[in-house]
Amino acid sequence: SHSVAYALVAYQCGYLKAHYPAEFMAATMTSELSDTARIFTLIEASRRMGIEVRPPDVNCSELRFSIEEGAIRMGLAAIRNVGEGAVLAMIGAREQGSPFRDLFELAERVPAGSLNRKVLESLVAAGACDALGSRAAVFAEFPPGRNDWTRASGHWPTRCTPRDIERESLANGTTAANGLITRCRAASMNSWGIRRDTGANTSTPNSKKTGG
Image (cartoon, rainbow, N blue to C red):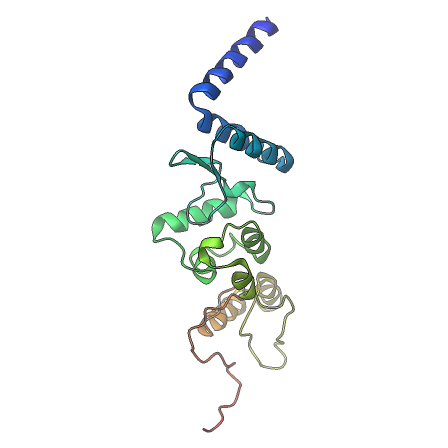
């Protein structure tokens, strides 16, 4: 009985691979999302079959491997350190508006708590943000990882990370954490410290203006 079942599955897979090669390979790669080495092997096999495999793209990719104009588009869930929740949040934000123009807009439009710095850096490193600019330029938008502000000094941050927000919430409550986020955004910074160069004044509230 086992032989008959295996023979039927083999026949079905052979039929799909012969008549729907791109769809078959996309589904096979999706089934191996947790095995990076296996995915690379399948990508090479697809290319030998004459199937184009396109890189991940925050403006085009779905959660899993998908078909795009006869080619296979790599799914965002295949990127290491990028979870399903983060991908679904990005897709939802993308479908509600226009394509993301830059990394700042990506982080700004995706609901808070769905992304963190590690996920964003993984997306950039995998080439999923190449449409937003060169990798070097996008990575340059990330500030140093250190925390460069102290509440005791009275200087509020012009950049903050999820860890900063969590620390503020634990120490002073949710209201204080929300105020921290507001001050960051007021300085044209988002909650991961990714800056959009708008030419606006980004001085902290306690900084002194100098005369011209």
